[in-house]
Length: 158
Image 1 (cartoon, rainbow, N blue to C red):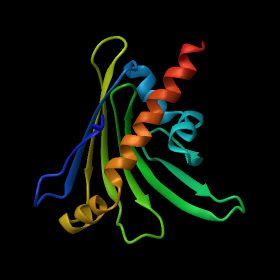
Image 2: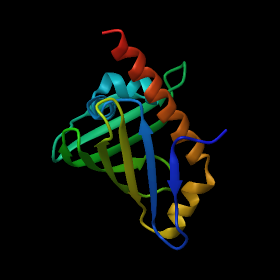
Image 3: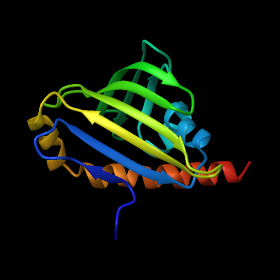
């Protein structure tokens, strides 16, 4: 089955371009990325901190049933323009991956559909290539599928 979330990783470049169209308004898609309660539902991580403003920061973590931290990520938010874009860093703690820079753009297609474009820039081509060796494409596609399902269900109930 074809994945709805598309990745473009050109050889010799330090970046990944991710695109996805959603059956959600741009406002709902933006909320899915900025409201902690919604982020937790589709990402499956606990949001420890989320300051959606210039010079803000965020931190996510996942724990096992015994409270042991399995995954932690954090970053600095550089710019947020509602329903348009977020510029932030992203770092997976306790891994060999350095901090990456993310440009996340939200674009309305119609009143009920929108497009997400993420440009992720890595420190080196090797770091980008190492990320692509992981099940990164499948993971982000699964997360985006869950995002669309959770947000659609939640806002259709209102």
